[in-house]
Length: 332
Image (cartoon, rainbow, N blue to C red; front, side, top):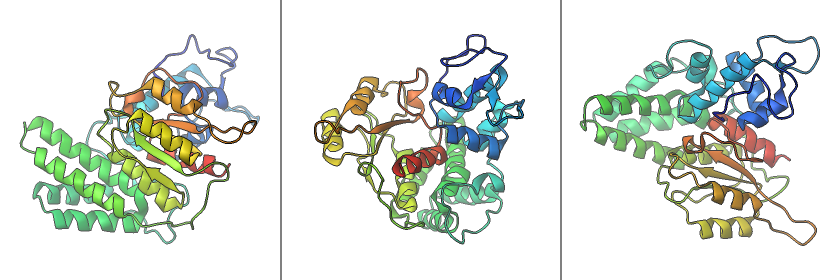
């Protein structure tokens, strides 16, 4: 998700511009996992324009620029399906669109017997109308049914986020008239995410390390996306510890040392709260006996981390990619 541009198509560990960039090198450059790049290729057609006959793909400077734009948009909160269309030169992703039904059916270990997704636009319209009426019971019923039928990932990416964006745009264009609508909708989404049932794949423990830790950096109060990630982990049967907004540095460090987590997710909504020294401190925090010390993997979540990539840390662009990465880390 880095914003840095290539120097004539060259990057660390890559060959010439003509030879192209390897998938591994590109993943490191963008701060995502190779699995995320393969998923974007499969789901959105975001693969290399030219494919060789061998097993190793090479990404041209044009491919790299396209994926940098994809990461920039997703880090700003644009749903992945819309960001992909925009990065490939399709309509502006900030128009009130949601992904197609096919875009929302592929996530790690989907719920058994999940219903095929219908028209997400209709789901969004129904939810938005209930929110505008301040009809909390109807909003709750719709959200609960959504998660039960389609799971956390699909519900979040296809309906919750687009509806929140639509309400936010309405608020911006109408002064303060719709602030109460956005507050009510956010609260109801939070309640449903807290109630999300699981697991759908059976409980499991990380192969290496303790439970996944999720926390907002100091000064960050916006934690709804982190709540969605926690609900997704519950659905996947992975143990997690949610510490919520504005966690003091000393408290977070103490929790990491006590739990020995396989991974720590740090959420920052704005650049003013993105505490890079804290992220480096958490990545260096160790536990265990001398000679067999362990460190957590650190995932930087949210648009606040946009820009310079932190070495050794991952920056998944969305909920789906974060879950895929965390499942992979937990499985060792």
